[in-house]
Length: 115
Image (tube, rainbow, N blue to C red; front, top):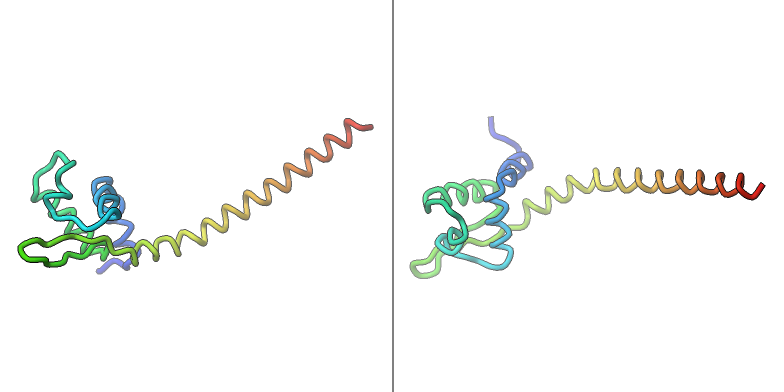
């Protein structure tokens, strides 16, 4: 059974190495060697991470002469952000209600102090 696109994206983002690769690509396109430079792992290991990111649609690989630069593809991240937005609104609403409740308590305490 094939996973839905959101699950595939979240699974790809679950690994810290892949998130670091995306952070690097957010600064601009890079070759596999440039991507691998800060990591203490083999090029085949980096290539496996890149394959996961490509399968999730998070990166694309171009061709410029003998180089195949990788580029960040933001569309899957936008879908994650859209999904998270529902929960963000829930938490913001919860915090707003808590703020109102705390204001009521403070007003009652001030009222009791004035009496």
